[in-house]
Image (cartoon, rainbow, N blue to C red):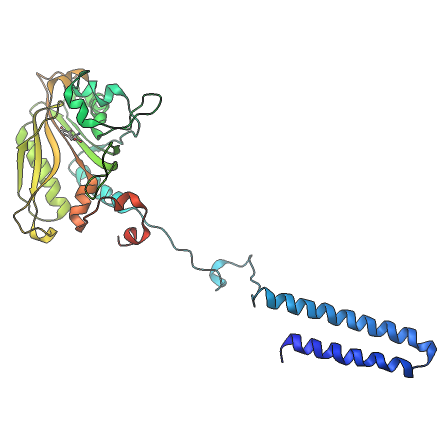
Amino acid sequence: MSKIEEIKGKIKALNAEYAKIKTIAPEERKAFGIELNKKREALQKELQEALDAEESGSVTPIDITAPAAENAQIPEIKKGSKHPLMTELERVLDIYSHMGFNIMEAQQLDDEFHMFESLNFPEGHPARDGYDTFRTAEGYIPPAHTSTMQHRALKRYKKDLENGGKIAVVIPGRVFRNEDVDATHEHTFYQCEGIFVSEGTTFGQMLGVLKNFFETYYGQNLNIKTQPGYFPFTEPSIELLIEKPKSLGGKGDGWLEMLGCGMIHPNVLKMAGIDPTKYKGFAWGGGIDRLVMLKYGLTDVRYFESGKLDFLKEF
Ligand code: DAH
């Protein structure tokens, strides 16, 4: 029998008691009635409580002061995880720092000077159009590439050159472009910039550093090749390609453009107060998203910024 039925049964039995009033001596009737009323009130209260409990579902009260692990009803809290781009970026930085590069972080808002002038794009230079990006109402620029940090990095580490050393720095950052978004183009993505300056820097050293980086990151020997590119801040300017190996889903016959690089233009060194007749340098910049997509065989760059948990949980 349910609790409700049991109480109802008691109330029914109690109601029958009232009939007995007639048989009781008149002077005792009042006390008898009061006693019955008390009992009935108590039963009705009990019934109401039982009905309320049933309505709110048969929830067993929990002790909210008990430690979570002891209380089986509190769902286990699922921990989040690092975004795959951040995990991979740490691997990238680890490789460069083992090679002896310092790390500087890029800004997410920059200005006209660092975006253009300091990189040898004078006003009205047609190559400015290739870096179409956004602007805030105050005229600040969410940078279209991490190269906007070159001038700052050169100035910051210039002392090392003067002390007979070299400038070796990598600069990861988030960049923004006014793109038509599709599977291979995002308006927001990550890049890593690199700069190396010393007295005897050569083009061959640049290729050596970059080949070494890609081989370490992908954990295998790779073929690389270069093709001419154009950037106002390097002379010559190069695009570096790697041959897509079978283990990364390639047929061994495809070339992928991984980054832009070149020997730092004398004007860029001069603007940072470095004598280009004495020092030479190389610089490069490439997308992190693209690097990671190739590593995991991903075909749509938009997943990275989508916040889709089922995608993120795969890493
Ligand atoms: N900033 C260029 C881009 O995003 C890539 C690049 C090219 C960076 C040459 C460099 C460089 O540092 O030397 O298109």
